Amino acid sequence: MYFQNTCFILDVKMFNPKVLNYLSEKVFEDLRKKQKIPANLYFEFNKYPIIDNFRKKVKKNDLDLILALLESKAKEELYFGLSISKNLINEQQIKKRIFEIWENSSDYKTKREVMWRILDIPDLPIKIHKEIYEFVKTNWDDWTKDTLAFYGNEDHILEAVIKRSSDRSFPESKHWVYLCLATLSKNRGAAKNFIKKYIESNITINSLVANEMLVNLDARYK
Image (cartoon, rainbow, N blue to C red; front, side):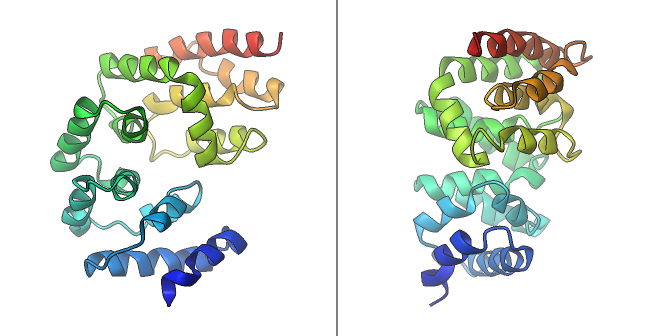
C-alpha cells in the first residue's frame, strides 16, 4: 500500500527530487479525489525543504481543496493547508481565512503556523508585523525550538534562511523573521554578517529587528 511505504521514502531518500516529485504528485492526486491521508504523513510532508515541492504542485483550481484544509479541526491537516496555501496567499478567501485563524486562535502552536502565511502578504501593515514580532519574542524558546525542527538544526539554519531570503517568492518584508533565526546558527560570524545587511534597510521592521538581533547574538556568546 502506498502510504505504508511513504515514511520509509522520506527517511531514506528525503532529498531525492524524483522521489519528492512523485510523492507530491501522488498526494495531490489523492487530495483532489478527497481521499483521506493519515495525519502523521501531513507532519512529515510539512518540513523544509520537502514542503517546497508540495507548494509547486498547487494550482489555482485547488482553492477549494486548500480552504477545506484550512477549515479542518485536525491540526495536522490545518497546518499542512497553511503551508501549501503560500502560492495562493493573494486570493481573498485564503487571506480572509488565515487572518481569522490568527485572530481566533488562543494556542501558541496554531498561531506559530499561521504567522508564516500572514508574513507572505506583500503589503502587510507594519502594525501586523510588530504584532507577530511580539508573539515571536514572547514565545522565543518554544518558537525557536519548533522552527529549528522545521528547518533542520543549528548547523543548517543559516544556510536555509539565506536561501529563503534570496527567494523572490517571499516578500522582503518577511526577512525580519529570518534574522531572528540567523541568531540560532553556530556560525556566529556569518550570522552577524547576514544580519548587518539589514541594519539600514528601507523596510522599517527589518531594520528594527536587525538591530535587536545583533544585540541578542552578542549576548548569546558572552
